[in-house]
Length: 407
Length: 230
Image (cartoon, rainbow over all chains, first blue to last red; front, side, top):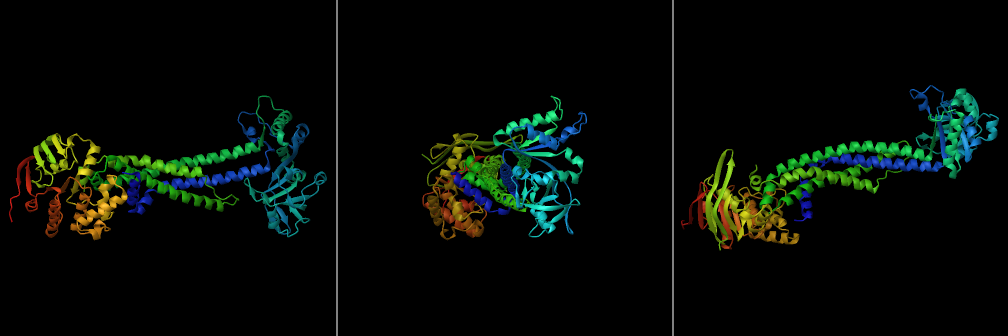
């Protein structure tokens, strides 16, 4: 007998009770849907993150004070400091640094007439910031060296800030208040939206020194440094930063750094490891769901074998061999789980698209790679075989005389 | 050479501590084209004999040759093949697959004989025409009367052109009018040259056969031609 024939028999058996078939396979549906949804979302995120990090450039470097060192037990409490003086030392001493800016972040309210708005961050940076971040003003201008040197009271805002404060069609030149201090809007950043978990349009930029005045002097003790290295000198620049900072911070030879250097590669690795961990956790959950789904299939197949004992007896009486019966039930189990896999695939794709569209950040459309589809079907089929083999074997070993007599 | 040759056939079962001799040395020869009724009370061994004749089971000892094949030496797989090729079963309870049409029910033995789909359809149609159900081919069993169901079962038994037609109480679930109708069909099949073995406990059904074999306690009590009565 042909395998194709077994398929026909299996399908007609499932058609007689479609509701039961669907309920039975629900576990598989959920498992596959989860896997497909997660994969599609993670793939989308990865696309986005990789794309954004690459747009920033491979020569983008962040230096952060390493607060964990300060809290590490057993380490003599030492104030972790990273200052703009460190940054300027790096700029002077490390060859290959193209641009460098300090960055301090603060929460301050901005106000224009009677409108108040809490931006995501007020950032104190210098004039190199746009080049380093590949993020420029859309209107007006960014700070100049002269603004910084003369401590001019100027501010550059994101588009959302313009909208929220109702600065109107010509925001440049308006006087707003940042944390209670008046400043003139000299530029509006280009619209960028959500990127790497930050709403860029909701940022307010002030000159670094102005920010220190706003946030208090101590803010200058723990700044971030953001810099752009010459593309071919990224590794050397990283080494140089380490050397300069360790010397300036008097770190003994065997002690760990009290700062962190993040490059694009590190950020990529970081995001990849986070996404990988998420995928692994979901994978574990899905594995459990598949096993539960498989047990459901085994259960219903055992019921089916019992229900159809006489049918099995008859088939044997008219010439079905053991393996014909085995195939019939095994294919029925596999078909059941494959149907579940197919439904799950569609549901998962839909779910992925839905989640993607509901998330507040701009994700690329859900994308299910071919390997995920094959994996989903492969796993479904494997579950069908694994959990179908026992009931099918049981059916195939039935004694035809007993089976025909079964009531 | 007889179609069926049974020599000293024995079948014993272990039931708890007791050994049951269901068949206790049966000799039987049946020629091609014969119409034989196998009779006996329950416990006489007639079901066991039918299972052995139908190659659903193998004897404890003794020999059974069916169309020159030593059945007692066959393994599971070969038994399935010989059931498929040589034996057509008709059961008291019809044993039709309820979800499938009459035509598909009749096709079933051919499915396991690996006959192509088109030929299957063709042969199943002919078998149904032969039992007078040409107009019921696409009906499911629950759309058919008891007599019609048994006709479908007979068509299924015939479709492989088996050496013997093995009917186990074929009228047991039918009313008397329908029984008469079904027995008339068997008589007609016999006249057309089929070898028929009829297992029954009803004397008037057994009268249709040319020869009556009566079992008691696992042995042949009598084996005689049907005397022309009525």
